[in-house]
Image (tube, rainbow, N blue to C red; front, top):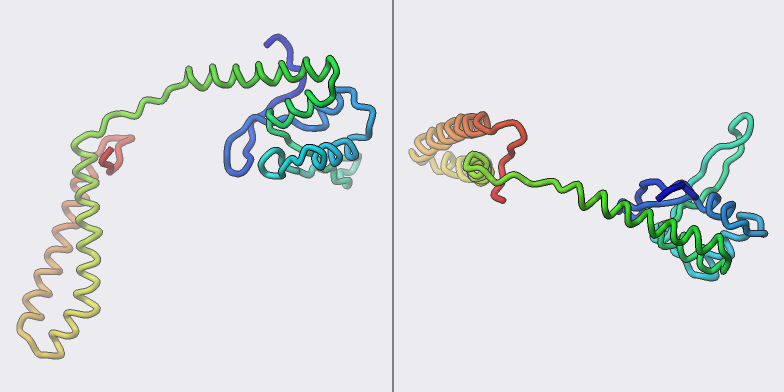
Length: 194
């Protein structure tokens, strides 16, 4: 890609990363005879482009004192290519090929950047399993404290005191195990199974 015909930038549409261009830049490059706002509204209606799918609207402040709001349309490259094609002129064909090349360059760059996920270590698996055990034990402990222990106390059962000691000891012991297992995780490791 020798020259940049129209600035292309990374953005987000519908929570998805996307390459975008400003419709004003496209309009200027194509040399459309209509006023930008009328051209854009007409094209959206005619080709049924959908906001937050084919384009997003942004507002910027312009003018000497930044007191004028300017409505901009950031287009996906697919939308920009379609708009370029429907102009049926050499500039439209040129910019369409340019956008295709931008997409190719992005794919080439993306395929060159491969992030290898390191294999799961036994420490990560142990940490995951201890976390799962601790989560279930906390549910049991909460049930014990809120329902079972009060019911046993009301019945004046000797089990209330003995089981209370076991639950308290178990909670403390599990906390020590959690801290110990997590302290063995290396930088970048986290509790996980895969």
